[in-house]
Structures are given as structure tokens and as C-alpha cells.
Amino acid sequence: MTQTNILGVVALVVGIVLLVFAWRGSNAPMDQMTEALTGRFSNTTMWYLLGGVVAVVAGAALIYRGAYQR
Image (cartoon, rainbow, N blue to C red; front, top):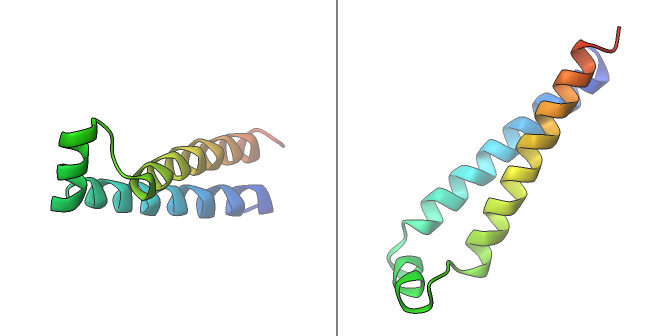
């Protein structure tokens, strides 16, 4: 397994963890009340969501690149 693949797997796992945190945070009562009143989620939830998506995409790209680098 190359370094690129290892970094890709780590980024993918971190992204999935961040997405789980965002999902759990969006289901919290306070965040649901904020979303109902303002129409958007809290800043923390949005940062977790954005960071998770970026990490998942980067991880998948690194895994793809590592698989076809040879």
C-alpha cells in the first residue's frame, strides 16, 4: 500500500467521522430550533458538513490516484 493510498484512507475516514458529527449535530434540539427559526443550521454543524464533504472527496481522489499511479 503506497503513501497516497494510506493518506486517502485516513482522509476518507476523517471525512466520514465529520459527516457523522454533522448529522448528529443537525438532529440536536437546539440546532433544529435554530434551523426552524433562521432556515439554516448552526455554524458548527455547517463547518462539520463542509469539512466532511471535502475530506471524503479528497480521500476518494487520493485512493483513486494511488490505485492508478503504477
